[in-house]
Length: 287
Length: 98
Image (cartoon, rainbow over all chains, first blue to last red; front, side, top):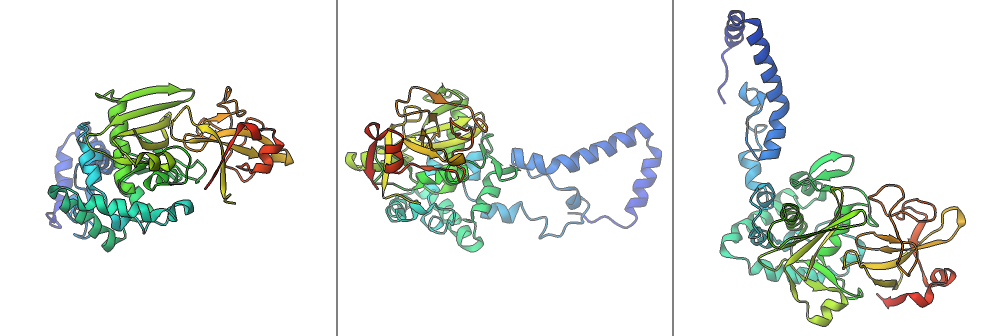
């Protein structure tokens, strides 16, 4: 950032006097618009426009942060979310996001899940160890950021991937709303049910093979593709709700519950997403 | 209260993954029952599951067909065997140990 000399304001004021009033007002309006829109544009499009404070050299290097240092700590999840290409290949990234380290420390895990977390963790460890070489760095960086910065905190997770849009309401990059509701109190808690198996549950129970961040990214990716009627996706209306289905190139989870146990926990490559308007109700892997 | 068993009617025909379970609302000391999918929160008025209830507090909240209040309020809970019998629905449900 270039620091301006003390004479600069005088120079600017002098230049403004030379400008016609109409031009001065236009410049002023543009400057205000930039100040107001700059954070939003960065957020929406993943740009890195400098803030007004940074341009005036009034921002300390630590505060002018976000770009390099924060990006380094950001999990790979933000990539598939912000990317616009709706290719099913994104599931590879999602699958590689699995970090067993981040799972147990999630305090929002519902009590009924905690007793079953052992089985899930073993699955997670297995899959992260089988991650492709290209994805190892990503996984590692996620794990590091988790341990160094406590990024597995639900609040961090929400703020990193989801944009707050009201009291306890969050919006994903593709426009899905995660709001309070359900038996668990919040949709985010509700979908956490699908991060672990419930072997005693009658019938089937789709289990996502990854952590919450990867799950959110997969939901967003699937929703975006299904809404755009991408190849292999399905969409049907059900009295007040819409059910989307999206395929993935690689397995994203397995069939749990008593039916899953009976069938030998087959791998699942499709994701079903239930929404009302834009409010996510639930999402889970299916056959 | 977590019950050592789970009472359900069938797998949800709407979402395919949830269990349609009996939920009771005790608002104003009146026992009202309904069937709710524990996954997609679709609500039916009884275990025949012929009539879906889509009104209530708002379209995003499963609501009691009797009083219209949220089925996640303190006045509602998953039915136990006694309540299912009181509703006369025992022969229409399955019970699974959890």
